[in-house]
Amino acid sequence: MNPQEMARKNLVLGIEFDKYLIEHPNLIEKIPQGAYVVLLPEYDPDLFKANMRLARKRLKEGEKVVFVRVGKLAPPPKSRLIRPRVEVAESV
Image (cartoon, rainbow, N blue to C red; front, side, top):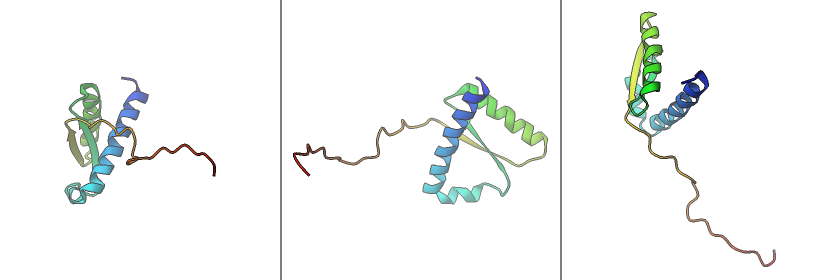
């Protein structure tokens, strides 16, 4: 996996984790101040390994690391519109 693909995948995971934290704010209390949050997608072995390498580096440097294991991602919604109505305009 090239660095750009890894960055893109981690960006998507990060955004989804942020959304999850907004919906579950009590989880924030489990993350120590100043800790590195490492997302480990169990559905993507290559990204899992790459992120684990980054985590090991941080741990060796004495940093706090928190793992977030992600079983899978739900498919993204195709649209956020709710019951849109299409009307052909005869005149305005």
